[in-house]
Image 1 (cartoon, rainbow, N blue to C red):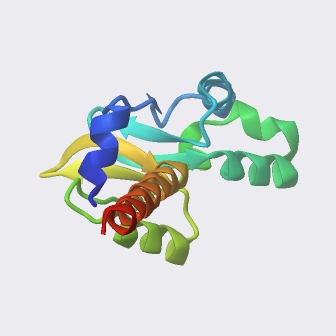
Image 2 (cartoon, rainbow, N blue to C red):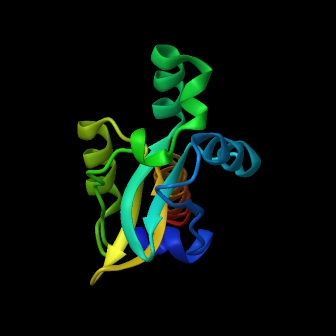
Length: 142
């Protein structure tokens, strides 16, 4: 099972901000779309990713003033990506090892979408349920 299957179901829409946008704007977009992270794009290039955790940590250390600064001050610049052909299991492993919850999907330098740990878990559960049903059918007709 590959990441392509997830993207085919959820689509390739990516919500993003620019590095110069204020953190407040990014926080409002996160809340509006009920998502945990937002890509930071400089044109079509991935400049970074900003998560809810990044914002909360900044508010914890800098106070509410953290919301008035640019996204570029809080974003994670070293973004781990995957391809649509990567297996769900390998991307889940990477997310676990790196302690991240969102991974952009990139092919030949082109952004195809983004997957979250929730997307991956949902797909793995669906796959497990399908396998269990197939086994039940096999046993019942065997």
